[in-house]
Image (cartoon, rainbow, N blue to C red; front, side):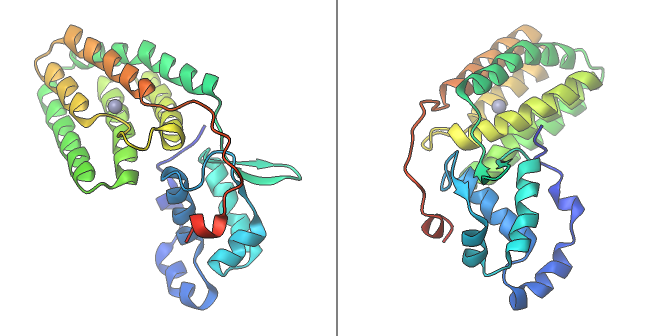
Length: 244
Ligand SMILES: [Zn+2]
């Protein structure tokens, strides 16, 4: 399962960036640029990521590219195929529908549990802060933060609902959704419609589990409707111009 939120802890960006000017881009910078290019649809699903070309584009050794690609594979956004190389991941339409279907089954349980929490008021205050952060990201048209924060809203909710197994499963489902949204969201619409999160929070604040459930299911239907899962076979992508 992809792990979209852990990468910052494993590396030492300060030391690497000091070396960067002499040796071309640092690993973390290459990683960030490739991830952004995938999330911003400049590198569509299925694009081949040739080591030689990436090494030339970033002015680094192939060895450095070979260290970056498995990190992207670990997060599920790149697949590594023996003897063929690395490609931008391409979840199937069936996989995308299965993920959203599972969430529509699970998340009503999350909100029903949430409204029963004794410290609901404090939890709602935290959710409101999160929704405010989402608004700021949208106002700044910060695509990567929008996608990340949208997923984190649902993870936060599951964490607060107090069932650890539910929270763990939601984390995996949200990572998968984040990838699917990144790859398949229609470019003109945001991944999670932010005011829908705000409406869910207000229903939770009122302790209205029925209303929160209804809003959550509608919200997940909208997320699925906003995916463009029609398979478009684009021609070979020009890596140099996509990553420029
Ligand atoms: Zn959402």
